[in-house]
Length: 520
Image 1 (cartoon, rainbow, N blue to C red):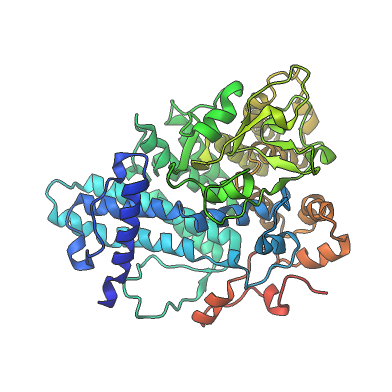
Image 2: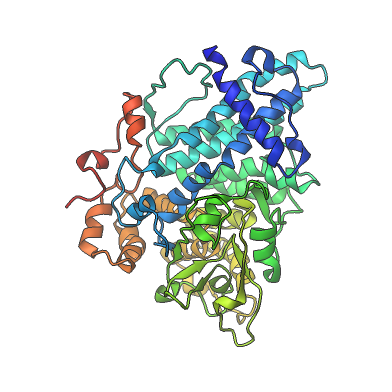
């Protein structure tokens, strides 16, 4: 019976989906006694396991790692007012391979569900006369999109990871696999998605399907992102153009309703792909790391603090994002993160803000992977890297789309191309605009890593961006540099349990030197 273990545990997830979903697409039938040989009978069985792929990403452990790997490690976020020893070790630069946030199990579990769909779904096509080849390819496109998103996240977080496209169907055999070259993995994923992109579902009038599942525009957005990571700038531009050209209903939300429509109501006009949660299974991870309360028994509301961006003049005086995304706490001098967990419900005519101006939610029902603003700013970055005055002007126009939305009261010409008419200046403008626009959305640390990868050194990023985070937390500059100037230290260590269980894995060299990230 060993070979039935995977599908048994998967059926448990499928059953949970039927209880917690916000749409009847998740009204699924498989029960825990289902065995592998009898499972892939019709389209509903395929649909069930595709739904399990999405449901796996809803798990709190999966979401926590998206936040930790992409946001907590960045210069956007400081220690919170509550204590979490494992998070504190990351903030204090005492990260080691025993830290539970180094575990990648949740991601490989999701990848295995995707591999299972890709491998076995064709069996249902042979048995179900009403199941078409086009429908099959659409489901496989969803599974490949989720798989690529998971692998791309792992590559950016760990760099050196194991890679497989085969499902694990027998847990009696130990998982032993060497790591693959990270750039080779991303190149494979791009080629894999290009083959399937035209089979993916197009826009749907049902927003839960259009925004909450992998569609053609989600796959194209992911290809653009991975191409940008590899430095394939023309492919990035081409795929950004594909997203905008083929989706006339995709548009930026207007300034007055931006925060509520995008981050609270969800499924907004500018959303491309977001995870949908429900009242019975909210986005606990974001709620607990950013929010003010939690309904999960015994959970800790960490309330990570935003960096005080006034010290670096990141925002213009007219920029609403400086008021809508975070708010100062009068009591402790920290800054509460508002994005995803609240909104500014009262506008003071003087322009001043206080905590009483904000309404905070006790739940969070979504997490956005891609929205239209990302397409504009990915294209801007690629144009800058191609160089030339015309490309710089085109990049500036892309930046203006999000900047003007966030600064509706600024004077005409307040942001002028003449101030950024060199490649270095425009490069910094795009990076700063991405920081402003995507604060607390899990992108910032990966943006910094992409810049490091491009420059071939991290000295500029450490000195200009990361140093200020750690100095704000009271860490001494020389100590900080000794801990993050190593090229390997910017990636996560592999969890010690994984290294023990898989003898073919090679630990990140930096974490072989010391039991933690310090080199004192």
